[in-house]
Amino acid sequence: MIRYLQYLPVALTVLGLLSRFFIRDGGVGVVNGVVVFLISWWVIIFMMLPIGVRSQEEGGEVVEGSEPGAPQSPMLKKKMWWTTVATSTLWVVYFIITESGLMAQFMPTGSFWG
Image 1 (cartoon, helix red, strand yellow):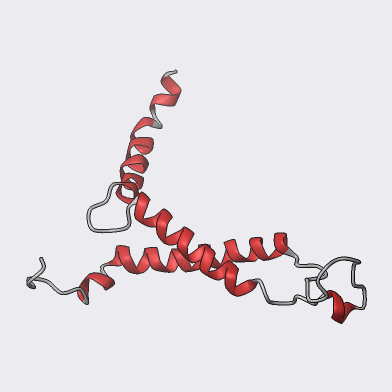
Image 2 (spheres, rainbow, N blue to C red):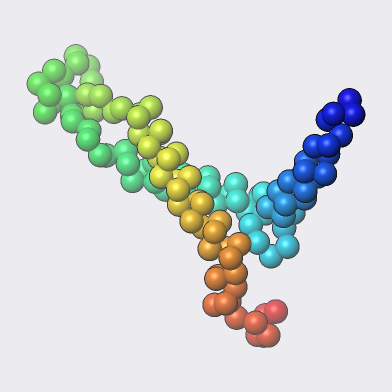
């Protein structure tokens, strides 16, 4: 037990630094971060859906009773994976810009609304 107490100051310091990212003080809060991530994820998935899709008519194998323009193999798992990777990358860029204060430089202050 005594051996683990030496890690207590380090753990408290790390928790203190991490709390900056979860307690909002003008930066990215948890709710703000999740909302930005989810909206970006849906926008990107809808942009990726038509990429690489071949219709059944183009493939020459139209299933009886289906629309000939229906996708032969939509590759949804692969597209969802790449969407998550792209969204995570964009979110990290958004996080860095917001936390660095770069965005705050261009925000109006002392205006009529606030």
